[in-house]
Image 1: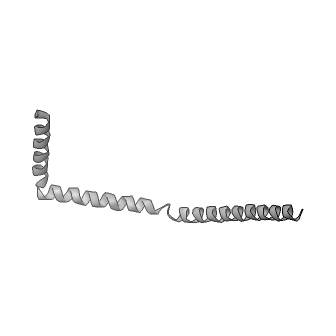
Image 2: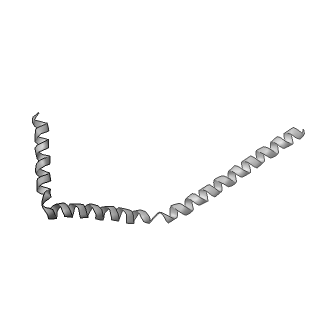
Image 3: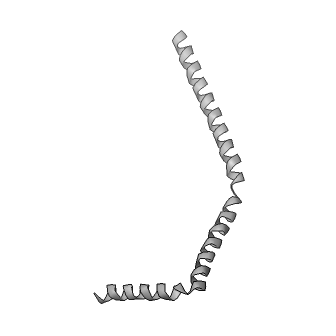
Length: 81
């Protein structure tokens, strides 16, 4: 009988500790998920601004025509072969 009491106590303890750990982990995930919610909008805005700056630089320098001509030539050489 003492062995059954020890086994039951060990199982009960394990269940309670796992439940506590799962509760703590879920609370931490919720806490940090709420803080990151608005940050992605600023990150996307930053990426968009970088892309716009690159496109603006390409248009302002006139290199866009050269790039377009080169791409058209490469596409023509692929489709012609």
